[in-house]
Image (tube, rainbow over all chains, first blue to last red; front, side, top):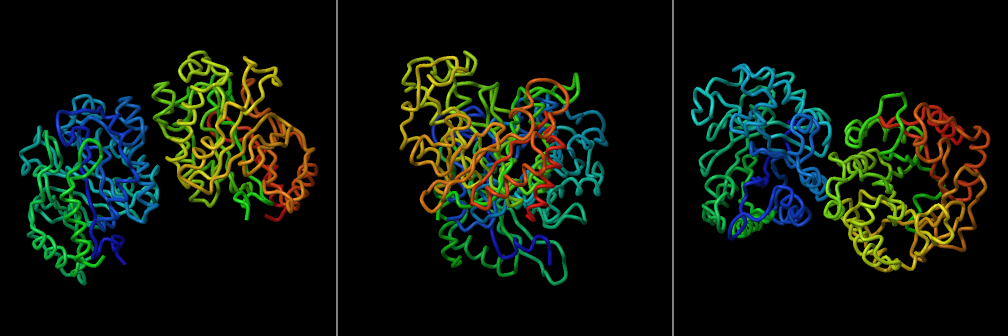
Length: 309
Length: 309
């Protein structure tokens, strides 16, 4: 049985809850610690369950200079950039309590992160990123051991070949920086059943390493990709698709944009993918206060009904 | 069935892991956050289990310096006094994983705290402690809701009639400061099955409020008290007894005092109490590095063997 079998024929929800997230109206109101303090964990997880989600992808952090969960390997280099409330940890507990799975989003590079973090972790020291990778793997391992069976999976971002991905700040690095064995050992620390995907960019539907259990499947706004035949492959097919905001997260003033797909489009696509034992994660816009885009939530609830889940 | 029935005929382990613990070796002192970071959660919980402990009694904090778990209400009044690592949450999760119950120690007075703490929570404002009790009930409720079913019980300290306690700083307050219904509602928030004991001092074997589910039973170093007849009462009999140092290893550097009781004394006493459906919590000395006193641990392991647990 594939380790990622629990994804097959199901969907989850991702939110890009980042310090830059804006409120529903007006200018930014909260600091990062206020955001963590005000996040209603129970209400958020209940909403996920009501939407029929079988898992949630939530960021520990995303090159914004802050992390939603304490990590001594981060704090010993830059004190004070993990939120005072261990928000992601509390979420993981509640998610498990409600019978869902928890996948953490985490970047594997800090190329676009704040200078302080690039410096502290040695990102700019050399193109082989040797020092950085040693330090960053300790961060991953710390989270892995701390969460144990509360962390069911990783969705690692930024596994790029910068010759192809020219949008990065520096363009002299690629995935040869990974020691595959050591990396996956760190990723599975505390839970050997934990699954991992390494995203190498949008609309690739590929994987970087043999050891990945499911594919990152970043699909921008497309409903173009369909699962392959599972009889012949070991990796779980998975697509990550944003349903509302065009840029994954809500960084502009005002209301989050409405869903991009009609109910018919969304329902038909989902049914086809799930029938073929694929897994889909719907990215939904989220406000500064931790509430999700109402129209998208309502649409996914209708999806749940249409599937009879 | 009494809510505290799971205690009957069993014993648990308490540690006074407090910020002012003395190091085992001269010059080996750790600060508050270093102590939290260095705490080996898995090893600690495994050791309690190996001793036959059915529950862990662990402090959120005890009048000194800070708290081992984030609490937004406490941080509002006293920023930075919660450890960066949410140590208690990690212990509670691991306890549940290993099939143990978790009881939290928390004080209910700020009489012995520093002026800064007393002023922040309004302890000095009036002898009815109205302002303090409102703030402290909110702080306690925060932990209750956050931990939910990870928190099986409270052991509240310092529920004193201060005129009787010469060691206190002030002597004009008593338990009339509690709004019983509000206090117990907060104590049960997030988990209606949670049990509560209110300690009114050592060697009392009494309770303060009707709503308590078990006796705090602080028994200093004596093996004098025995369970009553359960057919005639609803409360769970319980004794909390320190086995080596006087609660916390706070007086001097070096090794923790050896066990105070012989194996025979301890075994005979425990057997008699447990057969009468009583419950005992053994307080075991703990060092700054989270290891417990080896000789005491060994003694309780022998107790487990002799009892055939």
